[in-house]
Image (cartoon, rainbow, N blue to C red):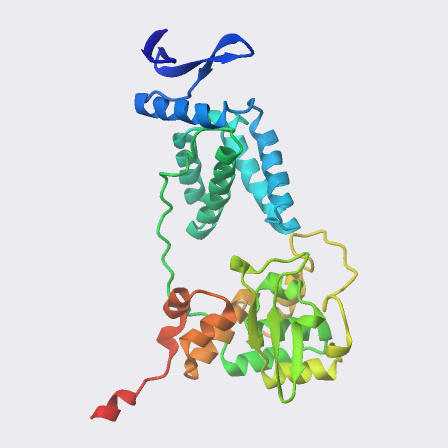
Length: 338
């Protein structure tokens, strides 16, 4: 072992730090081959103390989940998603302690994800891994975040080309008498709500005021909106009339199956009834998400402001413009100066 600086030694290619622990001199691995980084880590040890004892990756993930839930950061559904994602990564690194996971391990996992999954999905998995390692640094499980220098691939967001016409939408809505299915279809086609938003919808989200009304999609004890932002969507006359006819304002709790016990990642998984109905209508290509795009696309075709559409569907202005701006009718206002 060769001394490099005060208290810093080099054994093989790795730097170590000599520190008095309970009156005895002990050597602590700095986990780096870079001298400048070794000096930086020694400074961190002197300021914050040594790293905690290393455990298996799975046990460290369990600590991470407990910490996030205690902070109110995770719902039941997001907890399950983080656990599943990090379990895959743990298998990739053979359950090694996070302090022994390097940037190359993360890079190889990301490369594998991109060969198996859509880029958006791979990027979301990486978000979970970044979150875990950011926490691990704060929890003193390691010195640095190995995901810091890894750049996620750029995701192209092409314009939406698949959506139902107004006539198709109305036909789909007219072909069922099932009140739950009618509610689901109206949420998607007339309010642009996402699958989980429909599943978690509560009666008190819907307000009928005079001749109008709105749905206020908001955080609850079982649901967190995408991007953690509540939003309000005006009700169409069709949707408003349905709610009145079915006494929505006189009810409480969940709209769909209030007593259902969760056995799926969604509180209510209505995909089977949706798919069966679409097949019956000859519209198999229209998924719940396509219905949401139909809501935005029809608004864009009628000249509604992209700003309003973005606000109602809960997407960023940039994403909304890329997806729907091409559908806007020709603007002849330029001729005002002719």
